[in-house]
Length: 335
Figure 1 (spheres, rainbow, N blue to C red):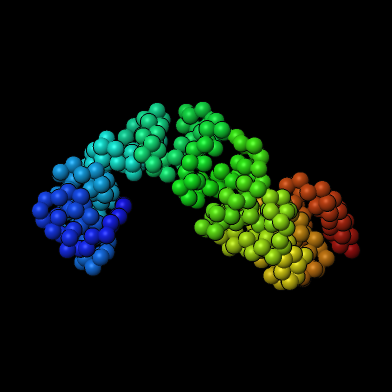
Figure 2 (cartoon, rainbow, N blue to C red):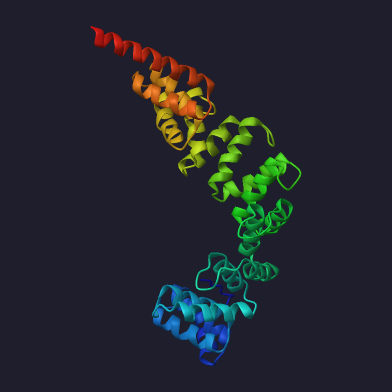
């Protein structure tokens, strides 16, 4: 769905709609759909005005009416009619409709799965300035899937164009490529700028990387407090590595006051999501009773998890625990 109102009053849109102006009919329909500018929120009036504009081949009306038919909002759900309206809007050059047609062909939903058709629609939408289409083209070339040849440089260029339009996912992907030197010359400072922009707009992955940069000083000046802040933001969003790192920061007092009690829940979350470091820390904590009650079984559990991830010290400690545990069990049976 899309709405955009350009300075007119509700009365002016209504007058234009009544006189048969399709763009005004479209906007009046969207006003009633969303209840903006003082318009009564009324799905029936929204469908009525959007239908009139769509009958006059107004692409924006066709695009929005297509959505209503696709989900059955205010009308009986009708995928075929939704597709006809969407295709008509796309063929008229409406960017969001072109982008949606590309996605339908990628997924094979209501149309045959067809990568070439998808690419053509995405390219048309991109030429008309659709940021999502630019991003999708970047993803296809980055992953090299769906029959598209992988090309990191091409992917980076598409992400760059979408990032200029402040599309947050494109900012993150381009930052990631600069950080690792994938398809572009490695540039930690450029990565930092892009990660910062995406992090401030809510990207958890960007927040995690921003924490790493402030921790390492590679791309920006070291700042333990900011590293902790962004690590916590990413951890609160469920990023496993950030959860593990936040636990370790609480253990060491890095950027915050040391607090073993606060460390444990974050380490547990990180370990559950595969963090070797978090599992190794927990293995030692339960072994020594640091911040937790000593628990040989839990210690062994987390040492084994870390050992499976390749942690050498955990391998050795797990082996010792198993050996001594077996010896103690044998002694108990003999007694």
